[in-house]
Amino acid sequence: MRMIAIALTLISIAFSANAMEAPKRILCIFDPIGANGPIFSAMRDYETAALKWGVALELKAYTNEAVALADFQAGSCDAVNVTGTRVRPYNLFAGSIEALGGLVSYEQVRELIGMLARPQAAKYMVDGNYEIGAIMPGGSVYVFVRDRAINSVEAAAGRRVATLDYDLASVKVVQHIGATMVPATVATFAQRFNNGDVDIAYAPAVAYEPFEMYKGLGTKGGIYRFSLAQMNFQMILHRDRFPPKFGQNSREFAYQNFDKAMAHVRAAEDTISEDYWIDLPDEQEIEYMEMFSSIRQELTEEGVYDQRMMKLMQKLRCRSNPAHHECATDLLL
Image (cartoon, rainbow, N blue to C red):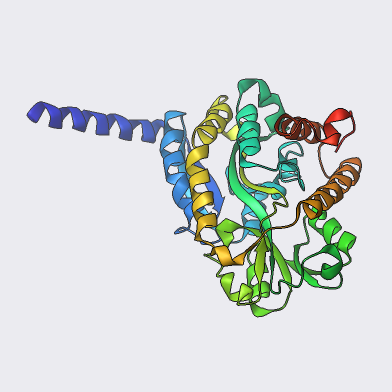
């Protein structure tokens, strides 16, 4: 017993010594719930792993995503963890993963994140001094309506939609269906929906419980079981503040923990009462996917989406459904 105690003491001392020698860096984490939220809590394991890669991290929670990014831009954060759409100014390739209808299943999300975690893909993860250090799934983005009568594009015309106005793709969709855009942020969209300020909102299932979106759904509302996009969280590094192999180690660690992140997503989806879910007719799903394809094409031509990422996601979709008409052409969809 005495030998075991000595061994444990030596391990503890060695661990502490490594922490003292490793450079200290600040990782700013956006979690709408704050330091008690699931995203921040999940990063505790990452904090431990980072020490093995030569960095002692200090985790700092933010409930305002824009403030976290501003602090990262100002240099107060050495790395920042935010939603994928916010990544576009720092890495358009990785920031295009949340493209409308780009990925239509969680298996496709797994494949893509796995591909991007390989050393061969490292060059796509770097843009100047910015490096994408991790990509983690956040779940399918669904449409929440306060009234089930909003069951088509035509029925959505003129309705008020809580829209992330910094996301040009969302703005395009609202304009396309003739709805009224009501500017919102991740922090305010659910409140607007619950208070009746808007008729429609879009969010992943992980937002349902913490943002109490059942209040907005009430007895008349519903959630369409149709994925608009695949939300994800990404970590951006100031590359020159970390060891050379840190980014690659980080991306591999994130992919190794894909199932753990997805378990949280699936648990959140299972939390939602089956009574709220609404299934669309097949022909309506096809209509919406065609609309998303057109919008993706337009936004790619405008430089909002990265063309290489659009091609990569098209290959993944075609691997799942080779008979789809988009897979018989070289068109960018």
